[in-house]
Length: 538
Image (cartoon, rainbow, N blue to C red):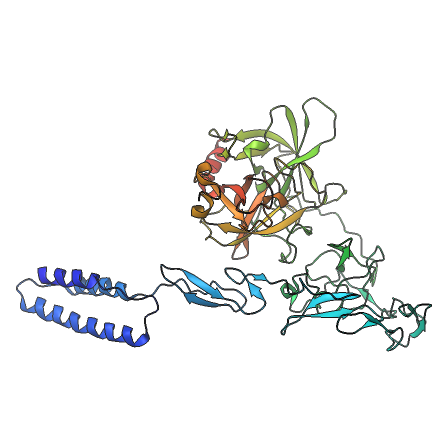
């Protein structure tokens, strides 16, 4: 057996290039097979026999030297990117136009240097991946030439009437037709919540014109399918909102609003449910609606998209002051909310709000709950450099034996059972309030961030030894969106198999959107045992 060991040691010195030519690998496998036969002949002639199991183990051990890295299986490159294997178990994504990023996950701003004059720059499917769509009556590749009523933009028999200038006109519409171009007919209405609406209204309730759905700032590709979205400006409801809506641009900023589409019939009043609310939540991490990736960068969060989101509101103890939003939190059970320890102040009275998406609007979906007990991690430490073990639990006060009621707008997020890999895209949500930036937004915001490796977070040019293994960072090293779009104490949620897990709690950072300063979060997986222990003991 000793010669076999010597032979294996010799083989262990072999090194194979990561991208060895197929012919070379075939030759090496052939040589290995002959060596195995020699090993077998030697051991069967010797007085010391080798078992078949031992031989198979030896063969497997040798073949492990010929295994190619599996970093490209499955392919980490998105949007049809090609994965190329590099040395040291690394890979490179070769991205098709117009995609960029480590995993081809981002789309290049093809309209960055394009000037469309009196029009909008929109994406197209073919090179150069953009074009200018002109506002009538402007024409040309750059939308600079005005030609009122030639051709006529009026539809459905509408008559185009020129104005006093070469760029002004009006459409005189036939009876029962309306809209700037007479595009809205007498039967233009929506059923239900308007997901099936395919009409031609393109105006918001504020009287503003809708943007094309393929406008360059809108992630149009996320809507491809049967949602009625396309290269047009008509109102749609691709994400299950309450009624049709569209994007618009006001003062250089992109926002959204509902449209002037009328319902086909008045909705029947909702009868109050006689079914008592359940004491235990049915499923965690399952929002009622599908979450569309379009709403990132802190633009808009839909009702029911983040049903575990909690607004942590405070006022001075003993006062009659109005409660104000201070931090975020995550509902993890009917009677439990997870938040950051640094949000806790013994001199403040706490109230929790959940179920809504706007702090300033009354909403029947909202629930307001009081806190019975606050549990701060025993090893929570605040230093000028960082916050350690920055996590706390809030036990809600039960009323008639129940705390939060599970509805389509109020659900619990799941606690993680495994770690998510680096570069996973996750979601942060909140009202834009952090420990340093107290001026937030009444509208619930959300943003997409990437999980960043611990090694990179702890490198000297990022956070160095200020971080420990109870922390993690997420965001963009280039200095884009980070936890300033969320709340201190708010959730970082990652998704797997259509289930959403609370993976991080917004903790601290170094300014907002600063290069090499991503947001820092309490790593929930490090506190799972602590969470379960405190919930059982309370």
